[in-house]
Image (cartoon, rainbow, N blue to C red; front, top):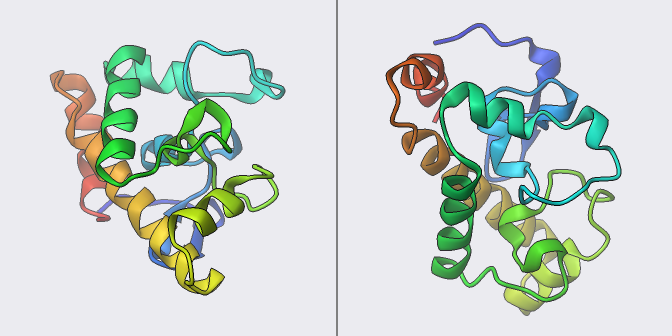
Length: 151
């Protein structure tokens, strides 16, 4: 188990008490699940730690994109409503993506929003684990090992 500042964790439906805050706000490696698609300029790019974190773990942008897009296809998360055409790239914050909740409601029709958010964050947790488990280089594996225990 790793010591994580409790201020850097959130209690989210479907993920429960140990969900990381986004990387740009000081979250841990698991927060890569909430990051945007590499290769695009971002409004808050000066705060973005995605590329730095990917380099630190030895995961290329191409590998990261492939993981997220494969996950999106497997879970029918492709959507023209959201940035980069996939819910896999959506963030944590409800107001961070104006069309995320609309896309989720289309994906899970006739489902109460509370249940949709539970599904969304459970799947984001699954995606997070998949991203970390894909780390192949030894230095990166050592860095993520304590965080795999949090799943």
